[in-house]
Image (cartoon, rainbow, N blue to C red; front, side, top):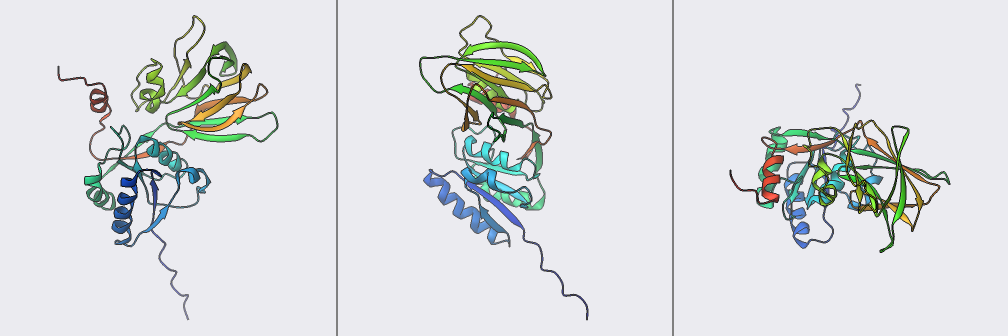
Length: 284
C-alpha cells in the first residue's frame, strides 16, 4: 500500500489594514472575499505585530490597505521573506501604494496571473546596542533617527562613519534615510531627493545648532554609528514608530540591509511623475 498523498500546501495572503480608517475595514472585507473565493487563506496581520511574524511563515503576497504609513510597515514585513507587497492607497497621494480602491480587484487578478513586476527597494538595518545587553534590531524602508523628546532643548550626538569619528552634533536629532525615504522626513529637512533605484544612505541633521548643517550621502556599507552624549532623553524612531529610548551608554548603528523590500508594480516606475504631482510641477 502506497503512502497517502500529502495535502496541498495552503496558499496564503497576508492582509495588513489601517487600524483606524473605516473605509479600510470595508475594503478589507472585499479583499478577503475575493481571495477566499479563489481558495486562498487570508491572514490578518496587525500593524503592531508585523515584527512578530516569523520569516518561515510563507505568504504568496502581502496586501497593504491604508496610506504610505501602513505600506511602510507592510514593506518591512517583506524583508527576509521575499514576499511581494501590493499597496492599495487610502492616503492623500501614495508614493508606495499605487493601486486605488476602485482598481483593487483588477490588481488582484493581475497578481494571480503573474502580470506584474517586483521592484526591490533598499532597506535600513538598525542595531540598537544597549549597555545593559538587550540589543534590538529593526528594519526601515524610509528612515531611522535618534531624536530628542524634550521641547526647547538640544541633544549632543556623536557620529562615527565606517569606524572613524566624524562629528559631534548639537541638534534636535539625526536621521539616516534611504533613497525611498529621501522624499519623506529627509525632504522636510531640505535633504536631497534621490532616485529609489539607488542604494545609499542619507545622513541629515534635524535643526542643527551649529554651522555645519549639510546632509551626507554615503555608501550603504558605511555603518553610521550615533551615540547620545548629552541633553534630554533621546529615542530611536524607525519609519515613524518609536523603537526604544537610548542613554549615553547606548549606541545606534545604521547601515544598508543586504535584503531588500519587494514592492509590486504594474507598468513602468513612476517616481518622477509622483514627484511632479506632489509639488505641483506642471508641464514644461
